Length: 570
Image (cartoon, rainbow, N blue to C red; front, side, top):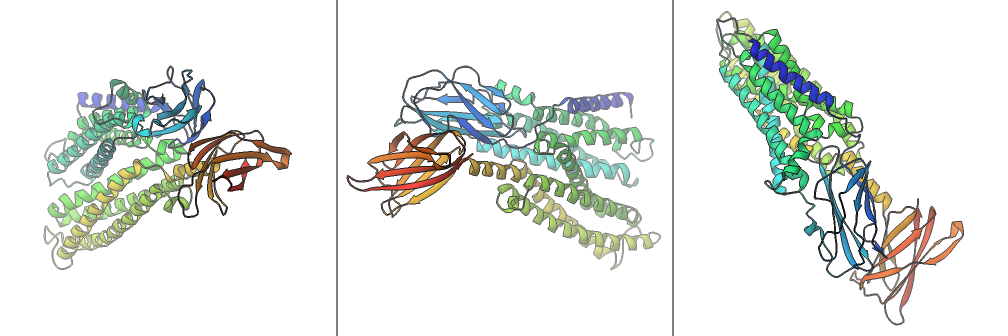
């Protein structure tokens, strides 16, 4: 290895290590969930609030120009820049006396680099006919950006496969007799794919965060990504790729020269760079934002490395060795590769199990979330690939044994016990490679999917902060929705329907709240009709306990009926 090449590789290594060590730690959760808002969704206020406060399940980052409050006339009424204090987002609001419907539109970035967006309606005085909608607030991600980002991640995984396994073969198992130009060219293609993927992800993350089109991200959006942990990880990956491009020529097989093998310093630098490069995947995704980030980061890196070695080795076997190596070479290579493959598969299964236990959290997460269902499909396909791998391992022994016995008689595996198993081995390896391509696609999809544990936590929080019930009388059916089920201000939505499920016009709404267990007598609640069958009530529930909410609806001049809801308030 020349001095220039060594210095360049060492510089890339130091840059990668420093960037990883200086990157701030992530919070211990993934995919932030909105816990509550002040004002609450659907609330009708008497006057304008001084600010809007959104509380999330974890600290978040603000997306510039994507936090806004839209008034009844479609104009923005927030005042000054929003600020984050811990897990709370504070949005200052202009003082206004304009009655009507308002919309809080937000887009923030959670710890695992995924955007979280939404819209919360509320009213001042009374709802207006032309209320702002989520369609005008621009909180959704562009489907094309999301698709391209998934494709870029897939290219990165594919490139990693073409680098890891082939480089390992070239360094330790490649026969001196054979030229290494073909495999080295494939490794370079893999390095290029990883580099292109990192650059594409780095750019696409900006419109993904901002919720804009592919070319709609601003300079501020790009700057936000580059200054984040996600951006730092991808810059490290690009630095590692640059260093590897310098070192890879040392792995080219040049028979008859002193440089026919990479020196130990080349191999050591490549190994260290490989570890640093692998770490950039988990620290920029779900793994670094889990409840146990150290465990999941190590497991994710091990999972990814084992996959790359195993699948990359299969590509080398199918594309080069099984066609070009002679009996002597196969007898020496196949048993070693078989052991490597077994170790890689074992690491793959163990690390994947650790990741699944942390990400899924419970049995329900496997079948009740998108992440869990995708994971089950991935595990099923991986099981089929492992079955093919088991068959390949058996064939490996049948190919290697005759080769070892006949190396003195022929240069290729011969006879029924040699040629046929060799052909079957190539077909079996091809099945493994094809199955792995599909598994990589599912892996790319999982990266963009909310982990099951986080999805279940969000659903659980929603259940714990919302009361839903349908109360029925002979006159009507009343749907009651109350949130946040905590002491203090609560918003109650009432929907009236007839026996056949049609919207029922209500002429008069009345509501009271009482806490018999604490001796609190019924108190009248202000009820504001929103439409013929929909009304909103505001309840100030100052103490914890089971509150008794009584609703009386008059549907005609003489027809009246009352229903009672028992609501636990914490």
